[in-house]
Length: 163
Picture (cartoon, one colour):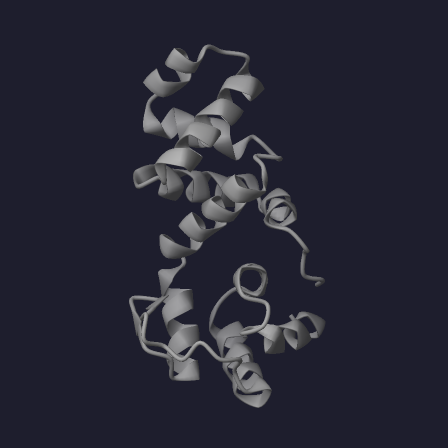
């Protein structure tokens, strides 16, 4: 599996159900600016008025958003974060535990060391994670980490050869 260079490409590679989960998670607590972007994408895709998009039930908005394959890079990035911070928190927590990084339910604490991580330690933690979670989910998570902070997570590049 090759890692994608953009959040938009990762978004397109997800299955419809994963995109729906991500959209639902994003819509639970959206960033206001990106919520407006999401509504705009729904309006354009469904050829509807903005008021009608705002009036849609959250499940309908999530379904409509999941059907959009090119939501734009900032929105795609936030949708992917939503996916990982909702249904995939156990995966995040397991990886950070394996690395010995401080976190709260899979979200790194602000005081976590921000330097690049030892490649051997990352590789070991990644291999352990791949034994306990679906490889596609692990690969997506690693790809998102690389996009967010390529210097810190550079060691994850090597994992794409065996994932």
